[in-house]
Image 1 (cartoon, rainbow, N blue to C red):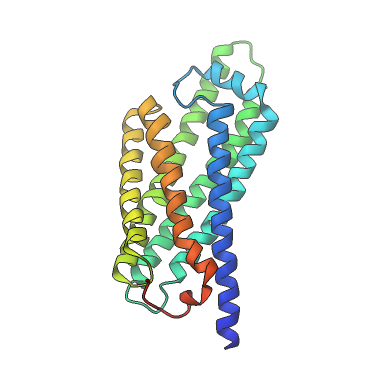
Image 2 (cartoon, one colour):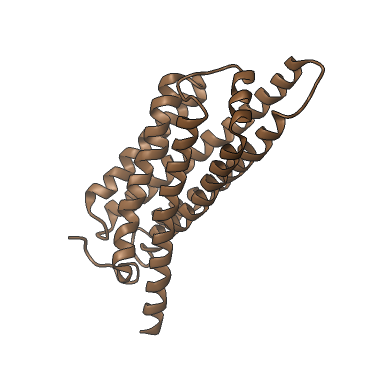
Amino acid sequence: MRWETDKGTATRIGAGAGIAGVSLAMLSAMAVLVLIQDPFADVAPSVYMNGIAGAKGLWVLLHFAVTIGTALRLAGLLTVGEAFHGTAARPLAAAGNGLSVAGVGLLIVTYARDGYVHPFLTQVATDTPGVRDAIFAASGRAAYSTEITGVLLVAGLAPIAYGLAMLVSPLYPRWVAWLGVGGGTGAVVTAAYLYATGLTDLGYGVLYPLFGMLVPAVWLIAAALPLWRAPARAAVATPAR
């Protein structure tokens, strides 16, 4: 009885952390796009740097918030995976956990670098501005590649694995399962499109906010909220109504 009580408390904490984290990360990332970085313009490095330099404090603060939110998001994802312990869907959930850990690691490195290194590069003085622009562009491209890979894992492949686990197990309503599978598939397509085309209006301005931010956030909240409300369902497999 004590074990079930302790596990229920831990499940509620993990689910709550996931809900708070994914909400904080999504809202902060959206604020970066709306307030500082134009998502509908593949601008020159000098223009990008001027935007960061003009709102350096807000840039750093928002990236710090995204980093914290992404770390808390991982707690929620792992809590969802733990809900399948002792069920036939456990291998699929374990795959989702592994993909989540790898993806969140990439995203945290990306956000920390983007939030700290790039404001520093805007201050670097060189005799030839073109050299500074080239350094910034190369750094931005490196951060962009790890970010897309992180999105591929966290918003794409991981929700697909969790969604398939939900289809195998009776723990969740089928709409939550299909939201994970469908949204994850959209994120995989989005990542592939971004890899192929770069910072296009459709890719970075539409598909990324939709399948890389909004849909995964809605899915995780839908998956974590029942665990926060009734954490005992993580300890005993009961059919979803």
